[in-house]
Structure formats: structure tokens, C-alpha cells
Image (cartoon, rainbow, N blue to C red):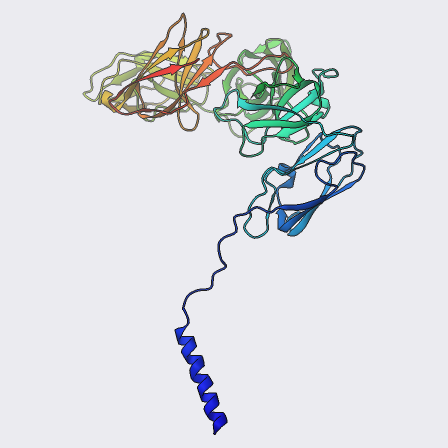
Length: 535
């Protein structure tokens, strides 16, 4: 009986304390926001007279190493990449096994960037650097600076900055040899710092190095350089401007696409491109036009419909000259004349009514073309044809809220193959002038002329541009689309009307570009005036 009472008493007490306990959810405590810490390394960081082949770095908690191939910067670069463990799995240490023979009396640095973080919360150990010397002391000199893009407003991420011995540096060095020192801006910086350097004279180069081999490949990489060497020690902050070289012009063998057309690819600048054709000693008329797809480095070559088994194509561009023999075969399809409305709907007051043709046009008969407004009143116009772009343009005085109808009778257009059009009709509409905005830009501090002022949209496409000559400072853009624009000024040093990139071997920098730092908001029925200082 006493035992039973004792059990009942314990049961009641348990229920009492259970009911009185504070209710709630179990938590893991405050979130860990502290990065892992190094508790030791072997050899110690900043050791001298290093002779080993393995480095071990110990941490106070489990860590992960990720993106090591992109984040780790070893300077001077090693020919054989070391073996680093762990990668992807958690550990309290990092082991670095060196596979290269190290240079004597040289300071090496291993910058891990953002690759090290704790295992649970991914708190990064940012920019951890392990340094050692194979000599008696650690080199301590530094070079700092920033990266700029010659064309784009923002520079690329992961830009490499390289130092070469100025005494042995030649123009071909960047193509063939790895640098003495290297660093990288990684994924969030435009500033760079090269540290633990020896005193001396160096050539400094910046690369957007797509292959990651610390060598310049003009077909894929951007490059920035200073014309003169730098000397250490220095307190100067250097600016390196990256540009992509335009390759030397080169044409590729044309391929047949239809019974009357070839496609020809090229690389480089096609501005002065000329193409001619022969069959034996007989000249064959040929028409060249741009490839219909944007950003495609190709042209269309139209040749007559005639009995041809092959064509000799001669391609010339300034000093470039090359001939190709294209064997022709009978294909089912031929290009036939098609006219389309490129204006497609709304016609702005700044533009012309434009049609496109898929075959070259050789004649336009304006007497068979009528342009009328919405009241069926005829409107005077002039027409023109752009051979390369295959565009037919109609220019006339435009009025507000009009509907313009272009009636084209049969045989108004005759193409390269003497094909004539059927009856066609195209329509374009105008809006109110108050649906557009006006922008006045006051330039100041212009160092030289001519300059090109461009208005860009959010995607970097050029919507409008003007060229200023002879000390002109006021640039007016009337009836432009309401939107936010970025302003860009180009110093057009060779007066060719567009921006020119640089040339490393010619030691030519890209033409200078200056961006206005803020977007300009142009709204409908607004007059916006903006000062743009180029100092």
C-alpha cells in the first residue's frame, strides 16, 4: 500500500511539472555568421627558406573549398597546378601538394579569393593568402590600380593583371610566355593589387583571359596595356583599359545556299570589302549584301541564273586579296523577289518609311508608286535604295496622327534577275509630336574634335547619335522615344564616324569613350536639358 501511494505521488508530480513547463519550439540558437579561423599551418604563413613540397593549413571548424580553379590565384604562376584537398567535402584542413620545382629566392603567394567557407552557414574566409619564400626574406612591394573597359560602361569580372620582366619583354611575350606575377579581380572587383613583389622594372598587362592560361589569344581575349614599363617601388595607381582587338580581315570560302546565292563568312572589318566573280576570263556580275541575321559576320553573294559549274570569287579589302573557287550545283530553291514592310506600324518623325527586299533591286519606277494620307491625298516623296542593306526608303514630310498608305503597282521594282513585283500595299502610322520628348545636351570640357554623342537604351543599343565638329557644344535630339537613356561620348580621332578599338602590336589604344554617370529620363512632351562635362 505504501509503495502504491509513492508511485501515485511521483506520477502527480510529473504531470504538474509537465503542465508548468514553458511551451515553445526548440531552436538552434543564434545563426553562425563568423568565418572560420586558421589555428595553424605547416610551414607557417610567411615562412622563408621554404624547401618542402606540401603545405597544410588547419582551421578551427569544418570548412569547404569550392570554385578553386576560378578563385585561386598563384603568383608567380606554376606550370603544374598543385593538388588541393579537400574539394567539395568538409574538412578541418587544406592540403596543398606542389608538383612544380620552385624558383630560388622567390616569394610565392596563394590567394584563395572566396573559395573557403565554413561547412554549415557558408560564411566565407575572404581573400585568405598564404605566402612563403624560397629565399631569406619575403618580397614586400605592391602595385595597385583599377580596370576599365574601353567600350562598355562596366568592366568584366575575373580580369587578370600580369607583370613581366621589362628587360626581357618583347611584343611576342604575351602570346608565348607566362608572367612573373599575376593577380585577378575575381567576380566582384574592378580594383587590383599585386603584392609581394621584387624591386625592378616591369611591363604590366591586363587580360580577360578566357582560357585561363595567362597568355593572350586575340581571337577570344581582351587586353589592356601601358606603353611604358613601370618601376618598383612606386606610389602610382595605374589604370588599365581593356579592349577586344578587331582581327585582321580574313574571308572564308563561300558556300552555296541556293541556285543564285552564296554565303561568305569573314572576320575583321568589312568596311572596304569588294567582291568580284569570273568564269574563266569572263566577268560575272555579282551583288553583295549583308547577311539578314544581326551580328553574323557573313555576306550574301547573288550571282546570275545561268549555266555555271563553278565561279572564281575574288575578295579584296585594302591590302587583303584572295580568290576562291566555288563549285556550283543545281539546287531546288532559288531566291525570288519578296518585299516586306520594315517600318511595321508606327513611323517616327525622325525615320523614313522603309521596305526590305530579299534580292537586290536594280530599278525603281516611282511613277508606279503612290503615297497617300488618311484623307486619300497624295503625298510627295523621294525614294532611294541601299544596296548592301537591301532597303528601299521613302522620305516625305510627315504630319501628326496620320495613316500613310503606300500603293505599289506591278513592275514598280525590278530586281537583279529582272523579276518584277506584283501589286503591293503597305501602311505606316504617325503619332502626336507630344508623344515624344526632346533632349538638349550641353557638352563642356571637350578636349578635341570630332566627338560622337550616342543615346543608348538599357540593353546598350544605340538609338540616336550626332557628330559634333568645329567646337560645337550643343547637341539637340528632337522627337525621340520616351525612355531612360545612357549618354556616351566617343572621341572620333580618325573622323570615320564610329568607335575604333585598339591594336596591341601597333601600340594603339582604343578611341576614348566617356559615359555620363546617370541615366537621363526623357518623357513624352518633355524638353530635357542636360549638362555633360567631359573633364
